[in-house]
Every structure is written in C-alpha cells, then in structure tokens.
Amino acid sequence: MIRVCFHGAESTGKSVLAQRLRTRFGWPWVAEYGREYAETHGTDFTMDDLLAMARGQNEAMLRASEVQPPVLILDTDPLMTAAWAQMLFGHAPDELFAYPKADFYLLFSPDVPWVEDGTRFFGTDEARARFAAVSEEMLVRAGVPYSRIDGGWDERERQVVEAVKAVKVRVPPAG
Image (cartoon, rainbow, N blue to C red; front, side, top):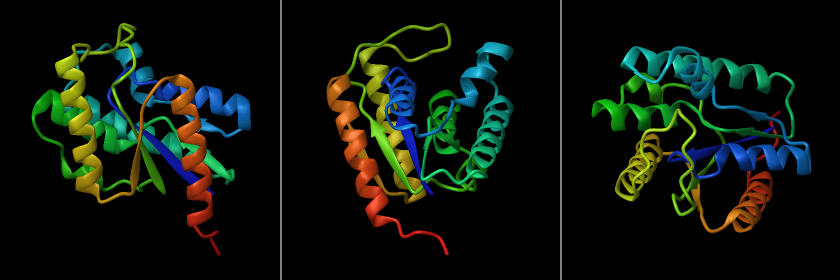
C-alpha cells in the first residue's frame, strides 16, 4: 500500500482532486477530519481543538489503511495540522510530528482561485503565500519526501497521477 498525502494551504484543490482520483482510479481517500470538526464545533479553534483534529485524522487514516488498498490518498494528515498550529498560534507542538507519516507528500501551490466555504481563514494573496510557506516548513521539519503540485486543475491532476505512479515504483512492497 502506498499512502500519498495532499498537503498545502487552503483552497488549493486537495479535496476536489482526491474526489476526482477516486472516481477516475478507484483510489480510496481519507477526507479532512478538520473540516468535519469545524462544521460541528465551529472555527474558533484552540490548540486543544487542533490536537483533537490530528487525533481524529490519524484514527481515520488507520481505519482506511486496514483494508490495504494499493493506493490510499490522504486529503491531509497531522503535519498539515502542524501548519495550522503555526499559523494560528505561532508554534507547532512536537506531538503533531509524532504520528505515522505518508510514503510521499504532494505540496499544492496556492496558484488557483480562492473559494470561501465558511471554514477557511487565509484568503488574501499574502496570507495564502505565508500558509504555503509554513506548510512546506512542516514537511521539511518532518524530513518527509515531497513534490510540488501547481498549475490549472487538469495540470494538477496530471502531476498528481504521475507522482503517484512514480511513488508506486519507488516504494517496495511490504513483506
């Protein structure tokens, strides 16, 4: 099983692309637990909220991994929660770096139009650029492999498909 995590600032197409790939290839995906949390509890987050989101995301990822699909797309993971913590509170707790990591990360650039959905925070060009930089800092801090995804929607999809195929070749089967 190859776990590929979509990572990056808000409104960069991660969830939309995960759904498209599920339809196109049948690749299961783990949705963003933080969105469900925000829709249920509101967006006046505390650090405890972010830590709860990371735990919920990890539990969802573990459940999805049990069936061992050949490719599992993670809409996000606790490293993205670390980026949120850095953006909102100025620091990312070590706990957020202790969770299991994906095999590969795809860092989505904020070069597509912003879409407000009621749960998003950082819509200005400056804030999006800062969030993108912080997102990358978390990947570097964690020492995980990643590639950038950018361009229009079709270009993003093409890049993701190529990256997943390349990761499938690089990651040896378990056992």
